[in-house]
Length: 300
Ligand code: ADP
Ligand code: MG
Image (cartoon, rainbow, N blue to C red; front, side, top):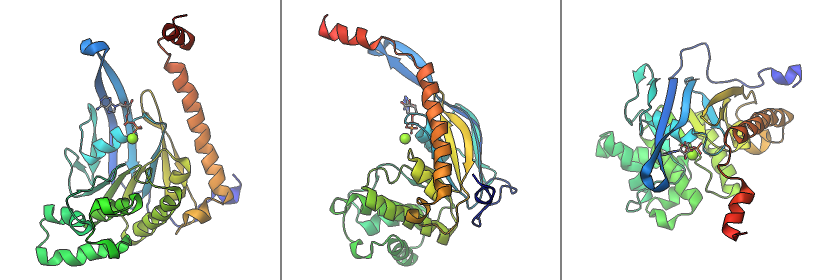
């Protein structure tokens, strides 16, 4: 990268000099897996010693190969599962369970099929005990923000994948959490819709100043959206390196992905992940040789 391009090109909203909004310290998660007719149990370290500081107002992406523990980590931050060791604090408060300070948007849409768009978005407001007469304005605001004004009274089965994901985002935003946790939220939508949703998310983030942790397996998506990209290694999953993305803001995905700086950062992360794949191939030895396996079936 040239000197010029390695300098900050855009204004970032967060400062690494302040204390972290989210402090992830020494997080490990072990799953007990059963093999061979449930007789043999084995501990499997899904993530080990994950340390990460996420700053207030930051857009942080986490990338890594499939199975490296991205969802496991996000579930722990969400409070949906407990770590075997380590602690996570948000604003100095220990995370022990899900709470309204965190909005969650999962890989699937996870909408309530029996509720209309309006009622899905209302969900968090009910839990937060927002008085009924104040809910309508909030619901309208967030449905408008994700561009679904015409679809307020539709049920999820009447919506496309992209629209469902918009509802999930509106639902997560409506109760105004300071932190948004997103696990491959756009993985299931077509490429064109994905880019629209990415741009919408950037706009919403700009307007609302949330702190976002965004899990993806797409390097392009991570670089296009984030201020920093945490690259995970596998076996066991841990944070391998954090790459800063000093691309100008506000961004539009189609504009940033054509820039030379984007390609450079993208390539750097790609190389890290390539090495990772090589490493994981070294560690995970197949129990049987492939030819041996095939010959068993072929009875050669
Ligand atoms: P990623 O989201 O990066 O694809 P996950 O966090 O879903 O990865 O999974 C990390 C590893 O932990 C994988 O090898 C997965 O099979 C394993 N794993 C996840 N959840 C469980 C579970 N409930 N029981 C056993 N193993 C699990
Ligand atoms: Mg996952």
